[in-house]
Length: 209
Image 1 (tube, helix red, strand yellow):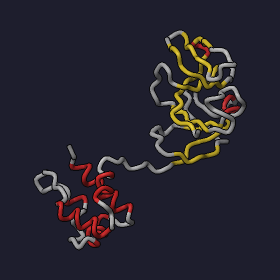
Image 2 (spheres, one colour):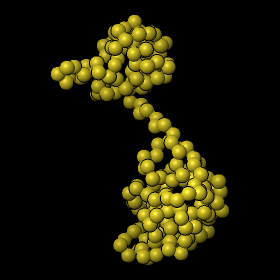
Image 3 (cartoon, helix red, strand yellow):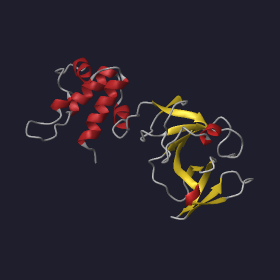
Image 4 (cartoon, helix red, strand yellow):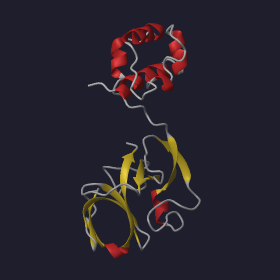
């Protein structure tokens, strides 16, 4: 079942795809320039107002878009714009001054990298060095870590210990007393750490592979 938001969203995406504003698209289609304004999408008594099939047909004619193209845009989610997130090398992450006690990025010395679809405003990126995370992550890969993301068994995570060690592992089990970690590289042993030795643990949400 189509929703009011889906249909209007497809109109907006057609407009953007063909470099029109909503009012510019309406004008190009021979309609009143206010036809597609957001204020016209709801009636004065709060009921949703839908675009007519005639106005959609005129939009397709004006842009040259096909009906299949319009249909494909009905359920397509708009891409979030890329935004900069802090970036440091994985080896540097063990040094002091880059994170607070909860694993949120602080201080100076960070570079920046632009990445899309990162919902956590405190997310940051680490550039992989060495081979301890192969074959999953290789030297030069960038992983994005979200301190706010919930942790679940099987998640890939980054952990910082009180000794300044920074590890990327798979989470096997976490309790109030300890955390069990599976190595991403079969040549490295799995680890079990007491929670009082862990400064923070955060989930890997993206990798540039």
